[in-house]
Length: 199
Image 1 (cartoon, rainbow, N blue to C red):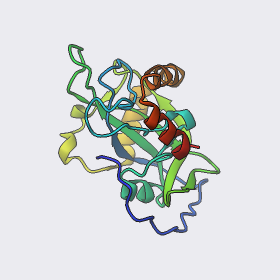
Image 2 (image 1 turned 90 degrees about the horizontal axis):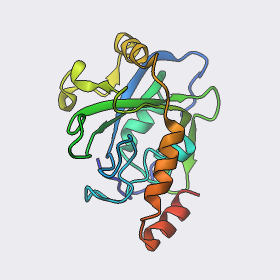
Image 3 (image 1 turned 30 degrees about the vertical axis):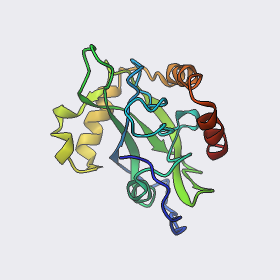
Image 4 (image 1 turned 120 degrees about the vertical axis):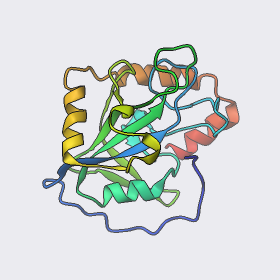
């Protein structure tokens, strides 16, 4: 689940008819920040898995700065799946949602520009992001045990997830403010590194 710097991947033809996508998706995991009540990445490496840059909500993207689980990303981009569902485990202690796996939102493929070949030799997902609070999140336990659940999500379950989010309010803007707050405590060397990688 950590980000690595492997040999640059081959640049594939990921052309998909974006006007003919299925109402399906796939799950994509990220590490949650223990310092936040909001569903944002582990910016400050509190889980000792590295300073996380993904999902890069600042660009409504995944795999934008650093290659993570590229097989899953390339599979999604080359498929007719419409939604990349973002999954995390609530890490903040002494909260109602601590320890549970939650589906906290998604990135939907755009009609154009749904992917980008990044300078490091990997693909990023770009789209329209909707992020929800842990209170409004979809608990994965209601589908199955996450560890054994297939990454791909069929039409029936996709419809159930979207219906669950139907009355919720996306908190993307609040998450962006929270990310900026957390990034103020980044070491200067990491700040420079991310500025280069996320340009």
